[in-house]
Image 1: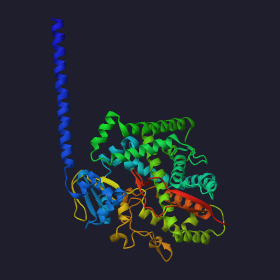
Image 2: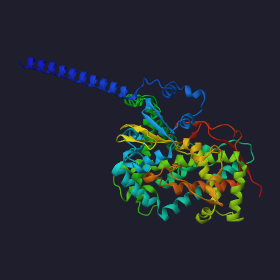
Image 3: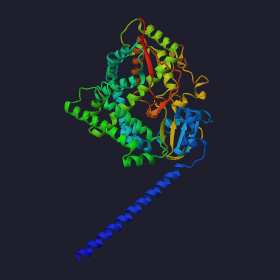
Length: 499
């Protein structure tokens, strides 16, 4: 009798498992079918076909340049990539609508959070709602403090004097090609690690050592960004589930970042943090959740490293083509600082209006973050009468906006710092016309620190060296990533200026 009951129970268990897994499989296939139908993968419009077949690459080196072309030819400055479920706009009125007027309707959204969730977790750049408000308030108090800004200024000054200038001097006049993009990425990584964790990775030492953390961080950023390029999120999600290809590499890279962050947090708790100025120490006074701490600080690591390096790389590429701008900066420096070889002070930098304009003009043409996306929570209509369905991804495109005649005039493609000056003084533009630092409630909190860091580098370099790009007439080609990165780097030659 017991054996019959046991056999019956096994048969019922087998039948239940079969029914359960069959239902699960059918439900998954049904969900996949609905997902595919919503994606409109069969769309035959010219734009979607060009995207799916990559035929746009015949005429454009960069996806951002193809988007710019499409947006220029759009009467409203807005286009729709149906297969991606993405509305892309270069219309300032639409940008203001998203970032200010209907801010609550355009959060980062769950699809975006999922893309970067493995790397950024619950960090400020990957969350909405109360979590975002809490982190922003906390970061605003910290980054706005005089002591923190002074600490950041001291870190940058030390890295310039002890590493950047000696490195440039070591190759000056030797016809030795140096990758300036790599130099700035190392420089920025050293700075942001000191500022965020109180750790010096020493990436910019003369031997240019390989940093496991920097490499892991690069790979994690790169592969996270590549997820967004897939025509369906199902592709990378399946690869992640099966631990294949780039998803396997992403997992391994994030593990390195996680282990580093865990060790730093553990070490700081053991040593104490009340008398330290780095972000981790300052946040530890408020947050006890170590995973949350990791997410917050890694987010600042991402923002402070790649954006500054990208901005500086583009600036010196432009400067190599415009010696008149370089001369004007040197004349302004001499007028403000005289023959002093000391580091420029905050007050002296405030007097350098042309330098500020030259940097802003570079950021207009080559924003470190070329586009930014939100997801509509409810149906909406943009100011240019574009209908936005609930759940649609809506992207504003600063790179394209900087190249729009309707925004910047017929000379929009020219590098012209004077467009930011009136009577020799810098005059700001509407932030929704120039959303390089975002705008509205999400405007970049680290903007002033980043600009000071860039100014410090420019002043130190142009006063002592002539930086020349051998093939500066070649148009930039960008690698896929969260920030604008030049494929192949920026090879330069360095010469000491005559005294």
